[in-house]
Image 1 (cartoon, one colour):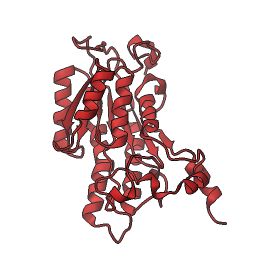
Image 2 (cartoon, one colour):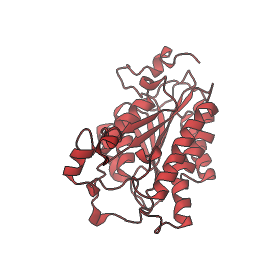
Image 3 (cartoon, one colour):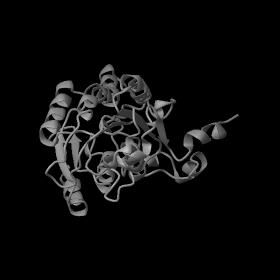
Length: 301
């Protein structure tokens, strides 16, 4: 494959934004990390972002209206999507190609936490977590690359750019539970490992397509909820609340001595979406402030 950066339309150094002209999908757009990723892609010149929600009842109007003011040339399209539904995924891709003629970035950020213990976990809970955390990325891997391979002339819409080279970036937002256990409950660990499995299996699947697939594994992220308002069943949440660890515990166990923010995860997604990461595929970007490196140092001997 030629170097992506040989095309001026994909240069990450272009003055109008490293994602200028890109058409993107972000699932889980009402969750804190999904919202931050939508904002990050818009900030770097994306032409269109499908901000996908789980149901029609989830409201993305706030983020759409805010971004329409700060980034008026980026079209934010709220779109209800059951990300683990095969036909729904195909319908969305058809809609995108009919409307825009191209697809460049797919961010799968619709994960579920699941119950914290095996006693609380039912087979149905496990199935739902696998669907959200690994089946949804699987459908992105299976169906998005063909759409990403389509070339397009410059469209008649704001931030339009031609697509003269096959290009695509699939980004799976998982968790540090993708590489070890004990972060929460069995559902979380098992389905996060499976999500990373989709990414690693995808390298060979995408060989020669011009499409890359990478994983982001956040650690302790402050998603703006506390234990009082937290669903302990974990069937609505993507990550545990950061205040499960006290500030003192965070200082002891996290290299940067604090929880991360959704925007810090989103910046990594922006990097993986752009030509700055053109030689990266199959990677697992751990965004945990150094906690996983510190772990052996803080275990009792």
